[in-house]
Image 1 (cartoon, protein in one colour):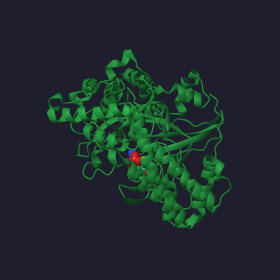
Image 2 (tube, rainbow, N blue to C red; image 1 turned 90 degrees about the vertical axis):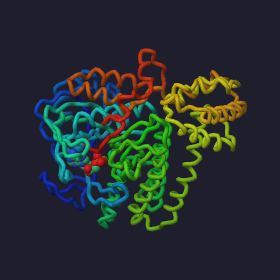
Image 3 (spheres, helix red, strand yellow; image 1 turned 45 degrees about the horizontal axis):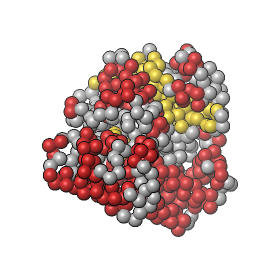
Image 4 (tube, protein in one colour; image 1 turned 120 degrees about the vertical axis):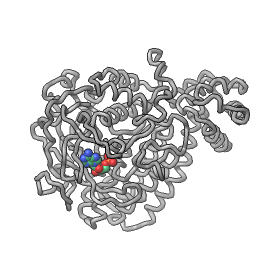
Length: 520
Ligand code: AMP
Ligand code: MG
């Protein structure tokens, strides 16, 4: 197994001089060196063939002993120096101080075909940042991260990715519902990959500590490697950097809204500086379209991170990043302009995205109203988002009276579709039909375009749970089946028709399907 190792983060940035693996506050450093913990009986249960290729490895490499050792914590590659990053963050709206990679260990960075990939083990044991926790991850949450990050990539959503999923052979104690009933679960490690795992929180920690020299070093490093077109460090390039982070974060959240992904824990330590979806924890997919839905039980009371709030939360997080960068920019006006642009730009891009889901490609002022009415209708009675939009593609112009039938499979409780609901839908379809007359494509062409933005298959919460239940019994077939299907989320896959279905009734109130805790 030969990787083209090109470390930069742990070479160009200041290291914590303390190399002991003890929990502590780490000052004036971007990271601490730490070795992954040895695992007792590791087994790789899945490898992403696409990711293998991306980093320059062959399928044979993926089956090698070295691969097993390196990606389960039992050995490191020559010349590499694994490390955990230091970062802080705002959690649920409050400054939480130092957080850091409490259970993620970066192995190295690899360069292949001019692309850079940091390889990081999640669940590889404690680090100086583990605080009171064990540094480990369980199979349940690892399967969820592994499957979802690759699925998001294939959906076209900016995301970190995953190379491999392994069980460690060790037992990990977790209290899933935080109700005082901890149980042992199978330990697991995901090797996740990203050009960089730097978060908003990496900048915030230096700003909070008034460590401006290191704030500058980290910003210069980030620009040099990931925003090189911005040129030499200067106040102007820092401002441009913030603008690009803002634009990328906006592009990411628009895609979340498009596919119905709810992150669940949008703390600033879970915001990638590259605008990638990162840290798959208690995330979920909208089944019934609902602006007020969040999968995260910890957030059930205030619903800070509900579907409908995600774009505003990205903006809130950008404010925190702006505050963190202020000491090296020393001027608020530019930052404020960029933050103000976010909102205007969000409205434009959301409209454009929603138009595309409806098969509308010209701009008509009234579309705003059409979309607002649609959002209201979708929340009249529990209506499956994925099925609704996918089946809407079958609509033929000039037949509004038949439209409701086309989408009726999306309704969870058909008896709730009473006269009033029907009337509202029929009215909406009349408006929609009128609007389609202003488009130039035929119904057939429109369907092709709509099918490119309205996925047929997403990783519904219950599907991941079925794969988890099987895997707990040692059967990993469903992981592979879902992994393979989710590579083509927009295609019609006759052999996978059973996954184009509403959430089954048994999953409505089941832990892991409709309720997810942060325990992972
Ligand atoms: P998260 O909510 O998963 O984004 O994690 C928030 C913080 O808690 C990060 O600093 C994580 O590294 C840390 N953390 C989460 N789970 C563990 C764990 N099992 N052991 C150590 N640190 C953890
Ligand atoms: Mg996190």
